[in-house]
Length: 298
Image 1: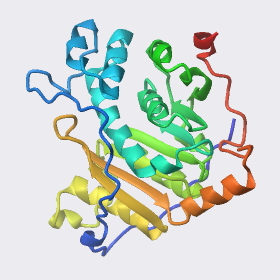
Image 2 (image 1 turned 120 degrees about the vertical axis):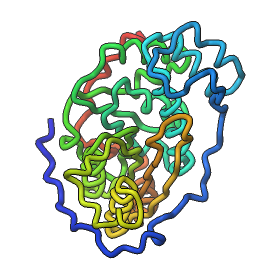
Image 3 (image 1 turned 45 degrees about the horizontal axis):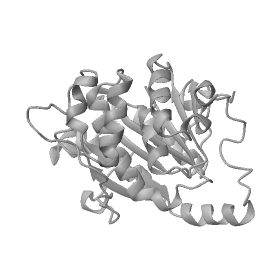
Image 4 (image 1 turned 90 degrees about the horizontal axis):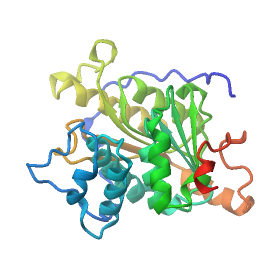
């Protein structure tokens, strides 16, 4: 496997006009089904989705179908489904036209790998999805096997690698994604993306203010917002276009979402499509490991 990636040290962002950092994307996600907001059904619950939850996913939408499959898997926390769906919708709304056979999704701190699964359902033309985490939950096998019954293309495209984010080889053809990238993981994810001019989508979480520079912006805004403002400033300073979103509060209180891509990213992808129509040079350059879910498709 690849050795540790030497990450660039970015200068601290200071004296930045906050109002110039906020760019809300014009490409709003198309909702393919909406989560129930009934106060009797807590969308933030960590309880496992089970057969008893099926009544909350009785509609004909794609989200309801995904919800029913998650219930039948009997291994997924309820909040994870709703957070992942909201994030995935926004990712597709921002990057959708470019999520084709040239692009590999890299789900960082993947856990069960649900974000990668849902993105492959919403954008089935993607080359592959690589889940990266220091430990793969055994229930991830069960989740993918259950989802593969409804979406049989999943086993051929999903891979799971136990390892560090610093081993990821960022490239314009890799979309780095993470829901609730805790603490400084968000900063490391941004730096890995910058090192390869890769696009990214991240929902930050758990702000370690004792070791994070806020540039004294907490005099004007709360400290956690200041941290994310400086993160956007880093992306801006490195010629990235940023798209900022908010997930619904009823789904998660840590609901800020940062999406960004290098200024010439779309032009780079178009050039790769023209010069390598067979997609032979798609990221990662080394072969993906064999799918651990091949047994699902026989």
